[in-house]
Length: 264
Length: 288
Image 1 (cartoon, helix red, strand yellow):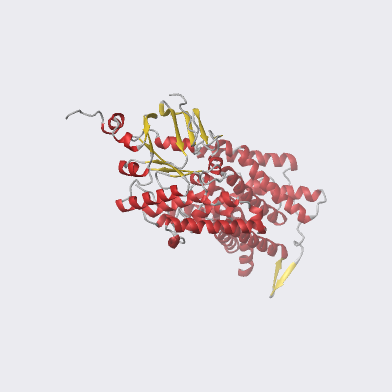
Image 2: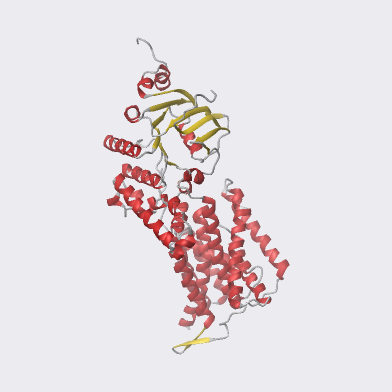
């Protein structure tokens, strides 16, 4: 599958991306693009290479071949912190928080890019630094109110309920001011109520102009939330399209359910 | 006698506390024990000694030694440990022991093995507190240790970079994905820990002399204190260092000075057996 039609409104373009682990082709010649302001879902069976794809996009691992572009910039094999600086942020399948930090402190770490984290200005408290610091504090307050955790800001993030821990992770990701937010199975293990509330939150995040790329298993979530779906299996792209098309696509049904027994 | 030993203990403990900080900070970000930390202590002291020989003003010589220590720690990490990021921790440990041997021999080659005394502006003066005479250099050590501890506490808890160091010690992957350069954080951690370690060597120089293997036991004591305080726990390392110094000093005073080092090692063994998470450490729950 070679580089296909050029997507003019693409925020993320992945071209011929491959990554193997030992002999396993976790991601194999994968090409797809994410349009700006979309909620784009990646679905596929377990082990299809979805999380590997996220790790490749965020620079946690490097590809064996292929290219990843953010708008017009090549971010392939950049260091994770550089990619974050370019406006890509993410949450993890297994929530990864800082176990000894409060909600506020956790989100504060996310504002590192905003204030630059320089030591000397912090020691001498320059005017510029104080302005930045104030901006960061305001931003944290805004984000925490937005995700509904302002009241819990002094609590240890790791002690919160599962759903709220996910919110902390999202708040931390938002604090880096992303253009593109990657969500790796954000509702896995959540109850129905939490799932519903999180879906609401995602669409509000999207309304702020942040493009979302989401890995999910829950087809109901994918169908209601996203406007574009890429189905992958064995590291390769199976099909792509809007939810209406994907739902009834035979290849998808086969990948998920096994070969369909017609008229069974 | 009692108060004398207590003061000696606090002075010794200050040195151990400063050493322990280096071990614990490095553990925090890399989860390994830098056994070459004792050589940073030695290196800092030697550079100060050398600068004094060049007629450098004493304060500048001290500061130069601290900076040299920071640089030594930084280079150690950049040149060796950084290249071993994905290697098993045992490899790093062996590399650290290698570095330590190389640095000891290098120091002996450059400066010789004869112990020399570092100058202190205070060593010849005493302060009278009540009917006691306390060496001013001891007071200097205690004050400087307190200053360093406060500065570190402010850095770690009140600056965003300090917070980033904490974040890196709790989850380095997630920290990177927040746009924080993990290598930079590790470098800073090494530089700060090493600067503090070198300061300990410089402060000790006028009392216990400067020689190539001076870092061996000081390193072991610092390591013991960091284990006592709970690996990775900076305030714990500080308190445990002080405690270790005081216990040692009393053991030397009331039992026999020959048992000074033995006492520390017995404490280390005891802690490892009974409370491996350290006095101030918390138990890490293993999920099964």
